[in-house]
Structure formats: structure tokens, C-alpha cells
Image: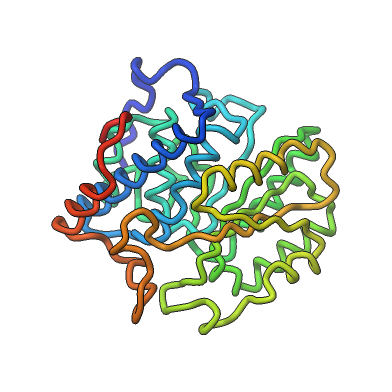
Length: 303
């Protein structure tokens, strides 16, 4: 592992880029989608569908919602903690981390390369700013979030713990053990966000191992449940900010955010007969060129 990579070049120091306007957030989400497509095409490996589907949510979190200081990640003690349980959508996380100042944009060129910090699933041994744990073994992230929330309570801190999950991942029993624990210990600072696209690598969630009635299950485990359109920037921002504005929440909270796999590029979006075709498939060079043309350039520019 190339330990000497300089993660905080001078030009990256300064104030956190915050995007208050919904239109600016949409523009950044479009750029994040461009980043994802370019990274995956360069690597010729990785997960296209979920990364594109969650671009709006990650953009809203890192450029408006989270309490965080990217340039002080390893020393700052008063920030929200983020855990990506469905780690296979790491490309979208890498993009927003780089764009918000955790490490240089130039690192995005190295996705899935030997000795790269940016592996196919997030890793922790290289101490890449923004990432606390290795993830992607499905079902484990919410347990980590519970442990982190308990740790914050011991330390007398009230920062929020955000855990992102997939709906197919919620077929895992460990998710529900963690959900039960969060409720038992009254961990009101946990906010779960579920990528609710009804697709997993082998097809539709509802056909493989149905999770419905999904919202009722979470409620029965003692969670407050919100539902929104995860690809509607305004709807998601309104939902998550309304949750965070409540200073004295009584229970853990989960947001079931409906998304479209491959959102933003029509030929990546789920379509019959194989709606999950783009779950774990990268675009070819030609497909990437077509997708980038459809998305168009943004004011933020490519890495």
C-alpha cells in the first residue's frame, strides 16, 4: 500500500464546500454520477447500478446535511459518523469524499488498482480519511452503527450515526438483531438509510426473499420510519433535515428511500427482462462515452 500518498494538498485546504440550493446539489449529484461512470470504466470493474442510484443521497449528506470537517477527519471529535454497510457501492462514496475534501480528486483515477486506497469495497487498513471500517460483507454495518452510538453515549456526545444499507441486505438476520439492539438501548442518534430499489444481484428482492411489509417490520422493532423518493433531491433533503432537526428523538430512525438502480442514464436503469443487470457490472468504454454525453458536463468539472 502506497503510504506516502499526500492526502491533503495545499489547494484542498480551506472551508468545507456546502451547497444550500437544491439546484446546486442536483448539479453536484450529476457530477458524482459522471465520476462513478468514469471510475468504473477506467477500472473495467465495479458496481454501476447502486452507485448511480444513491448519488443524490450521498450528495445531500456530504454537501448539506452532515456535521463534519473533512480536513480534520482523524482529529475532529464533534462530527456525525457514517458507515456504508452495502460496501459494494463504494464508488459513489469515494466520489463525494473526494469532492468534499477528504482526499484529492486525483485519487479517483486509481479505483480497484493494485496499491490503491480505493478498493472495490471500502477498507480501513490504509486509513483513508472518511472511512472508519472495512465493509461490504452484507448485514454487518448496522451492528457497527449500534456500537458507535453506544460509544458516543459513553463519551457524552450526541452526534448522529448514519448507516446506509440495501433493501436486499435486509434479508440478513444480523440487520434485525442490530435493529432490536438499537431499540432496546434507546439509541435515538442512529439514522438508517435504506436503498429501497427492490433489486439485488440475482433479481428482484420481492422474488428472492421478500422483506415486505418493510416499514411495518422496522416499526415493530421499535424504530421511527420515514419514507421518501431517494432520487428527488428536495424530498430527501426535506426528510433527512426534518429528522435531524428534532433534538430529542425517542427512538432510532430509518429512512426507506425509494431509488432506481442506474438512475440518471436510461440504459443503466433497471429494465426487463433482467432488471438487475447493472448491479455488479461496469460500463464498457463505449457505454461510458454514451452515458457521459447523456449526463452532460457540469460546472464542477471531471477529475
